[in-house]
Amino acid sequence: MAQFVHGWNKGRVFYIVIKALVLIGKSNKRDIQNSKLEKYQVSNQRAVRTLHQYGSTRMEVDIDGSLSYPEPQFDITQAEKHSFPKPLSTEEEQLMRVFYEHKIQEVCGAFGFPHKIQATAITYFKRFYLQWSVMEHHPKHIMLTCVYTSCKVEENHVSAEELGKGIQQDHQSLGFDLIVYAPYRSIEGFIDDMEDFCRAKDDTLQILKDLQERAKLEVDKTMLTDAPLLFPPGQLALAALRKANDVHTVVDFPRYLENMYSRQHSNHNISELIECLNAIDYSVMKLKIPTAKDMRHTDRKLKSCLDPSSQEDSKKREKKSKHKSRKSSSTAHGMPTNATS
Image (cartoon, rainbow, N blue to C red; front, side, top):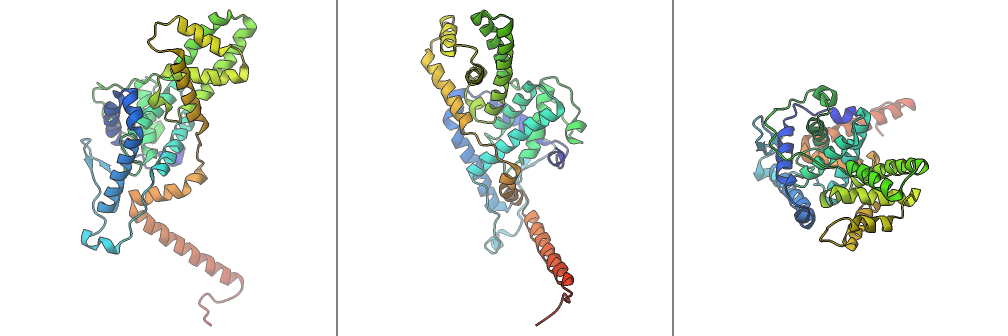
């Protein structure tokens, strides 16, 4: 985890995360569903324009919370003589987001945080990147800030030093809608309801407990998709329980859904619910969690966009390393390093 903590300096990025959550948190599901892809494309294109204009995409958060664009890396009149770093595509940005969402789960697991902390942090992370490109704010900093914010909101004490060694939070009045309703609590409610539905006895109670734990694992996977932005926690929980029930076969799930609906006074029919559950299952089925090896090339591109000078330093180190390698090889064969033909 140390490599993600490194560079999380001062935590002024906390302000911009809060600002993004305020703007996104009150959007309804249909609005987000209709414009999610468009939002990703808009932020990506904005970062590309910034890269071409300034030679870098890194956004700075000033002490008062305002944003500033990078200083031009070179005279704009000489721009044609310089090669720009290659920007990330929207697909590469998506892989980067999933990679760091998975890292949020790993960080929360390492600290032993409850599932609620993890789910809230991932939801904050998703909402933030509906507005910003990963080329503008590095995900490793936003990741830690989201975990820290989640701990504060959920009243789970963890010092900033433990998470990032140095973040300073400005305790402004939290008049923001930062409450996130995670699917894990909904799972517990449905399990209690299933106990009554099954008229569960001791042996069935244990199987239902196994079903609950399996469903939590299914939700962990669901949280890495876009489903938490599109569906309410109850539907995410039902989809996870249905998937877990395929393994444990505790409940006649179609009959349970019909029974549940018969007790509700809903304007929607059960086929609409099943359609939503199927859509959630599909988003999990197509999920691919990239490995660190998968992300190596994309991460180099991101670093180059955020700080083009790092690309030049990398090339110098690579050149120096090759020179050392040739020198060592020549020495090993007893040849002078400056031999000429």
